[in-house]
Length: 177
Ligand code: AMP
Image (spheres, rainbow, N blue to C red):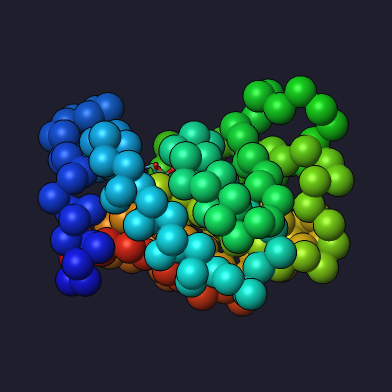
């Protein structure tokens, strides 16, 4: 573990059986009580993406928190990826399968340009389903998923497997095996 991953590990909480029985929920809200730690997380993830991406996408909703600060740090555009029905303008949309049922995510049309290299950021990598759907949406816009970044990886769920088909590296600040 790096010093940064140790500090993140000490800050976040694991809440058992939230939002349903059997889930060990990683609560990142305590990170935001420590502005120095937030600053260091932003710097670390921005450094990993510097020169490799043209735009940053944050995945609803906790991916907005650091996605926006990483984009500011890199002086790049920030684009919101939202659940279906939340964005007011015309959108590109993609449907994807969940463990039970299906879901859809959207992005405002024209906010991602064909050929752009995209950083896809979310707070946590679990099965990789959300990140894979986001990358497919980016490809539907004609752009390139160039990097995935997460604060937390639940490595025992092997979410990386789901992301192998994309030409993107995967950066995580702290990983649990
Ligand atoms: P997945 O699509 O399975 O990789 O799930 C990733 C998304 O679900 C992220 O947006 C996470 O915020 C959320 N998520 C999944 N599992 C957890 C967990 N154990 N603790 C906190 N958030 C989670």
